[in-house]
Length: 295
Image 1: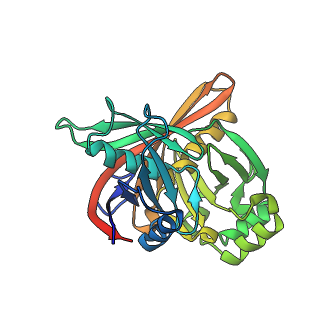
Image 2: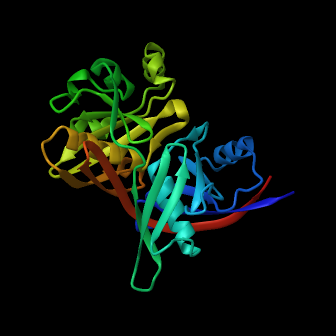
């Protein structure tokens, strides 16, 4: 039976067993789509990545991202973690990696310490900010076991937005964020009532804490009860926040995963570029395990 090497890392942290877990299959040639999906389900992390040769030799790799039940067009911590693993094997070019993904080309810049060891990475989301549905406050609140009064709409209502993958961004009170618990029946009702969601309902609940953000993300319909660190949603929040202001750029930090015992710290930026809003997200990355899978 053929075997496929993989490495696991904890992303958006500088401490092992914090942040968001990721498995990276560093050479996925020969694996079928079904086998990739089965391996992602077996790993049981938020996402697992599979590295393949690029279609354009000017790029570093083609990267496919699977969560427990489906393939993702783009995601944050899988790109950061995959870049750190590949850079550790010397596959970056002056600290830059270019990944071909369903949502477009993702540029990643890795960071190294004084000894040359990879310590983290920052990714540029592949698409500009786009907005989708606005969803009812009452239904969104029910998805997290909250009252409608705990959903704040002064900046924006619950808003579907994307930089390559769609999230519903929802501001809540700090107290509500701590108490939030996903209600899968409420998720199902909301998804069924809004066919335009196409069955994807990932809600990123957040609260401002001074000049930084605390966040939690629940996507139980996709098998992720709670995510320790959601880079793509964090970057999307930065882009949405900039769109609601008259600034040219913004930068702030997002803390996530605290309630899960996997604290994560994400650094996000957004800027206006030629009438569009573009965003980045970055953070640390720590090696954890190495192994191989037989298929």
